[in-house]
Image (cartoon, rainbow, N blue to C red; front, side, top):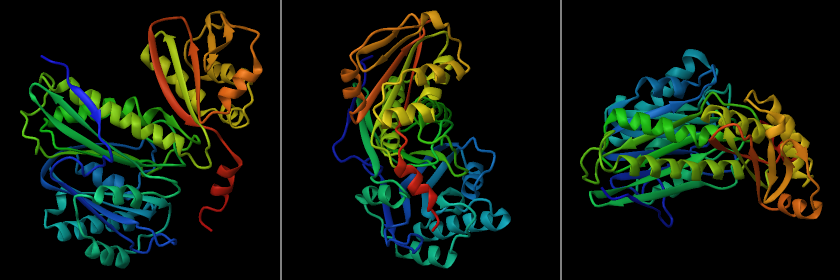
Length: 404
């Protein structure tokens, strides 16, 4: 068995895999006239799976879509931005179901095969007349993935999209994806949407496990502001157009698929963290030497989510005590006398005690667009990485007049 070769594709997007098309339109939900409604369509039935928000308040699209997954006959995703269709009771559920029905009519597929997603302001009804007119105008194309990546944006400043190929002696396939999220982002799939498509043939049980594993090390390790959304979801569709033998837990392509999906999701997740509302810096927190992977994740996520760590990074303040304080309250097992802390390549704390350091060198790292923080607990062998961003005045500005 040869190890699969994984490569990112230039200009890759969700419609890069064979058999997927997409299209968008401006339906009138966004005030700026940008595209706000789109459809992803597969030319063949798909095995599909999803992971959904941990928020106990579930938006109508989450309720509708989660009931249709997992599936072996998914054909399309219809998605809007500018309105979350959340906290609206039966009316919201009715609108979400109608949105799927309209997309099913447009693409000539069974309504049960259409998944639905929304993002935007909570508590406002979808303007269904605009949605219906917009869906009717959508034209699907092979290059439509790039437009779909933009249509799902809300406060995002740039689209997040990519595709990877996997090749080995048994054949190959492609996985593409798009994601959106800039604010209301916190571990446990937080307002985050991710859509993934692959032309690989896969078993449904394997696809569910692979998606869950990929989300655990990517989107669930991102924090912008500590809030989670009722609308968060990550969906994956596999149409088998690559012609490979179906991938199961024991197939030669199994590890290649798992690793490629993880790499793609991490790439998209880092894009979300770097594009956090008002952010100017990406923070990468790596915790090693933990007693278990769960402990490492807990520590890394807490540090990345800490408002005081975020503001220190924003101001390029080498106040490493904020990292230690966040670590201590994380709930992870720590022994102070064993902690080592680095910012960049500079060790600031060794065995729990401060070291003299060149403040100018550390500030230089903190001034960079990517700020690496590394903590070794020296208790075990487990490690984890989380991603966050700095917290700026612009974040407050964006969210103080979001609906006005």
